[in-house]
View 1 (cartoon, rainbow, N blue to C red):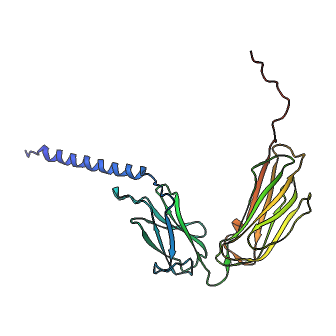
View 2: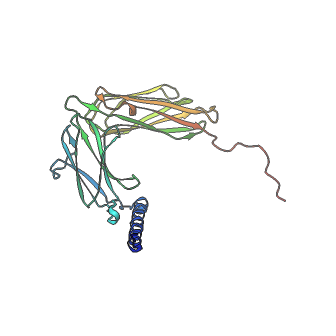
View 3: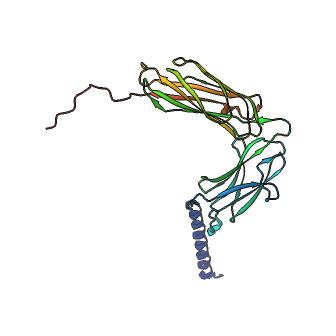
Length: 290
């Protein structure tokens, strides 16, 4: 009968135990690695393919070079605390690259099919939190395109008889000039028009309802260039007899003559709920203090 020494088996078992321990420790380290803050000094900059010439506007098929730096990089277990994320105009993540040095360069070939619009390259941590980002514009070689956006912000809660302020912001992130822009915004339900003023941006010609009336505001301008924006403040009076719990809503819409890349952000609806200005009087008397 052949005898087998127990010592090689013991050595093998011990080696497997150590290897398992290292594997588990690496997994724990990767899953619990802290997301270090950079103190706001991280940066991302886009260049031409030579990684020297600053560039923010590209054509399909060109190569974008990006430089990022001032971020922490871990050396234990080969785990990095940052990665590049290339994001298309439709917010789809196209490519990701681990960061291994500081600073670090990365290159991305824009699809030859186009995908015109505003792209982003962002540094992310292990929790996918954004730290620094840069944007670049891809133009269409065949036609002018734009991606207008409109937002209307107002108070979440209002009360009867109150005069409220809403901010309307029209933006053009490109890639081309948007021509023949028009936007409309409704006077919210259960409110009347008070005033409208433009705070900044290219001049818009506006038509409004008379003070105390309902209806829509119409504004237009000849065009807005790349990264142009315009902000307006609209003031309305809440009807004095509106009931608590009523939802006052309004729609806002923007269009232009230029081909639109994404129409989903050309329309928005705002809602404000009517609440009591102060607690109602009367009701049950407070309990007596013994």
